[in-house]
Amino acid sequence: MSAFEHIIDARDLHAWYGSSHVLHGIDFQIGCRETVGLLGRNGMGKSTLIRSLLGHVKQRDGHIAFFGQDMSKAKPHEVARLGVAYVPEGRGVFPNLTVRENLIMAARPNRDGNYE
Ligand SMILES: Nc1ncnc2c1ncn2[C@@H]1O[C@H](COP(=O)(O)OP(=O)(O)OP(=O)(O)O)[C@@H](O)[C@H]1O
Ligand SMILES: [Mg+2]
Image (cartoon, rainbow, N blue to C red; front, side):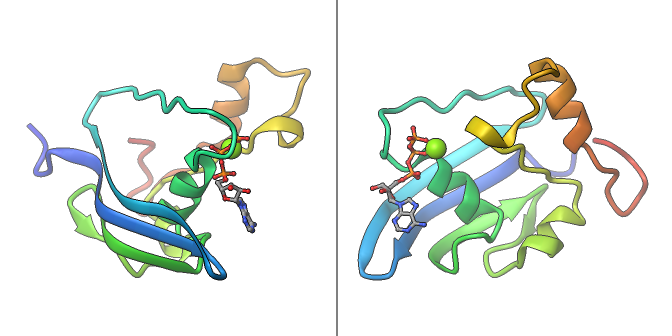
């Protein structure tokens, strides 16, 4: 059994682009060995949520933990070192590869050399 319950555990997450308040207190968890799909209309904030979790949105607030480790103030490279990767959407993917191949291509080992 893992020492942590959630791979990602975000609480009361807020994000802004300038004066535009886009995320309003989001709670978001992904459990171990769980696959989660995030659905919503265009412009609802799906990408902003993912980008906020990874530290790509500068103006954010709330509590974020990866693998039980507090990463609320972490920079993108610090999250990447944990083995967390972000696969782009739309024109950012390689259309000649399958979804699985696009995902595998982004996989990087964490500091322990593991892919988990
Ligand atoms: N770089 C940015 N600067 C300012 N506003 C932005 C920026 N990126 C997104 N937004 C705005 O933030 C809101 C959420 O956008 P976001 O891209 O997160 O939505 P989404 O759910 O991923 O949409 P889609 O389904 O089209 O991918 C929208 O109102 C969008 O216009
Ligand atoms: Mg999006």
